[in-house]
Image 1: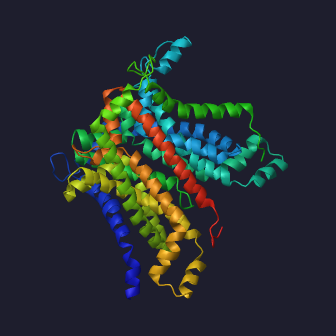
Image 2 (image 1 turned 60 degrees about the vertical axis):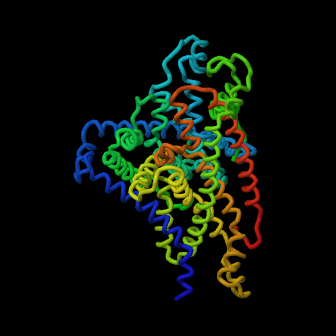
Image 3 (image 1 turned 180 degrees about the vertical axis):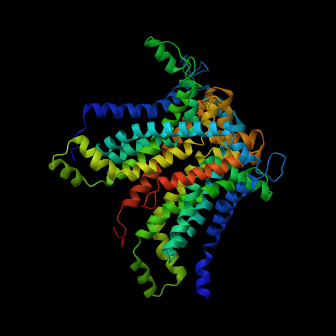
Length: 267
Length: 267
């Protein structure tokens, strides 16, 4: 059986990676979630999670993530659709993706300048007569910047599934007398639902956990699950509570993956 | 499909592109501002760039970031290619799917979870936070990306190639080094580059596992941005934007090469 052993040998590093960096961390987080701040084994953290403070935070985190995902989808779908109709569509797609390669923090930093009290956005508002508004550190700025960051990630999967759409189906719909809206509702959208699902998955889960944006842009006004985890791990050093929130975030993540699961594999 | 784009949709696309690129060019524009803020442009200057290049601390951080990214990309490519070969070789469909799902856990997990759980892992394992903890976690979250980039190439490869090699007397090692690896080289390069960009871009995971002494560019930008606006960051972002563009061009050419028909390819 030496043959089989050599065949399995090159799997060793990869399996080691799975055990050490995929399974072990999740188990450790689960383990830590049963220790309260004094280091005693207890269910305190879980009790604390079901108090109104944490439940409200969880709900608002979900609400923000939902808003961000919905708005991103509303912007990204038409963009992806129009992109597939342009002449050099792959070049345009590349140009859409380029901004997503710029460091996220630099983009957030740019908005500190744009949305600031004397920033470009306020200068524009002043010019059209609305006057200076407080834009930075509001819910609006948080959602705007998040949507801005996620747009390319939503466009990519939708573009791919629109691109795979067989154009003869649209001709068929047209021949059978379907209006444009009808064609979209009955043919295009159902056939690209997989792209929409994976786009939502790519946006919704990170939107639950963006802590740097809540810190930089929303000025601690918005607390997402991610912000709470970061707070507990790095500021108050209450790893137990942080782990408990992380456990719930992992559960939500699997639920969302299950709900938006696509049958096709791969990216 | 009608390929016409109405003027309205053209305007829509222009607005999307404007929104995507405006913040980036906004940053670049003000990096030449002698006024010291991002509100009004007083005069043209290269001072911020000069200051940037005299800041040895920052240059060391840039170097750190590059070293971590290159090493992480290298190691994760090696582990990832081995893993992809293993997954591809798996006989049972169920084994394959299980391995793939485990592989994707780190891709869909929010960065906060990865960061927090790795922090727990390193603390439990007694690894001092710093260069090695950052490098290890970067390798860890880059491995699944490499696997996903290499696997399609492997499944695209015709099994007759392997049969032919074996018929002609190639040993198992020969088959891998002389047939399989050359065939999947484009996938390996794509994986390497993806790993490189993921590592360069990462903030949240690094933020958790970096100690006091060690910092990468993203973490440094975050702490600078939290202190407020300083045009050094703008100058830095101009340079990073140019660097990103170079990476995009390289990536584009790799992709182009990948699309060339390869002997024995099955499409």
